[in-house]
Image (tube, rainbow, N blue to C red; front, side, top):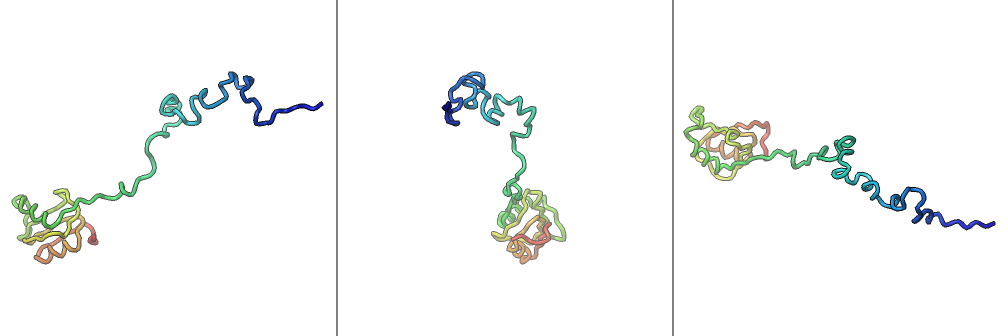
Amino acid sequence: MVVKIKPRRKWRRGHRTYHGSHKKWRGGGSRGGRGKAGMHKHKWTYTVKYAKDHFGKMGFKSVKQKKKKEVTLNLIDLSKLIEKFQDKLEKVDGFLKIRLKEFGYTKLLGKGKITQPIIVEVENVTPKAKEKIEKIGGKVVSSNAKDSG
């Protein structure tokens, strides 16, 4: 006797046997979503117990964040700074000595002119700024071994 068999792809399509109720085996609704859906909502207790590191930033740091931000000062602004705080600056061998780190600056740039010889302590200095200060008889003390450009 020939037995008629439904094609495999049609098995249990719409049937109420197996899977309990006929709505339970279709979609992710009966299990609260598929996979990790709802971990920040209705599956929060699971997250707290088994997946503590699931949320939040970790691992990679951007190159932009790693790069140190330099606070710059031009020579023209340096001369204004010296005029403003001339009484409070230290005098060494007849020169005024200014530590730019105390004023919050990390790099000295070469724009502008400077009129009096001074001693400048700074982390980084451009070659142009160093040349201008030394040209009028001043000194630049840089904490970095090589000058930045």
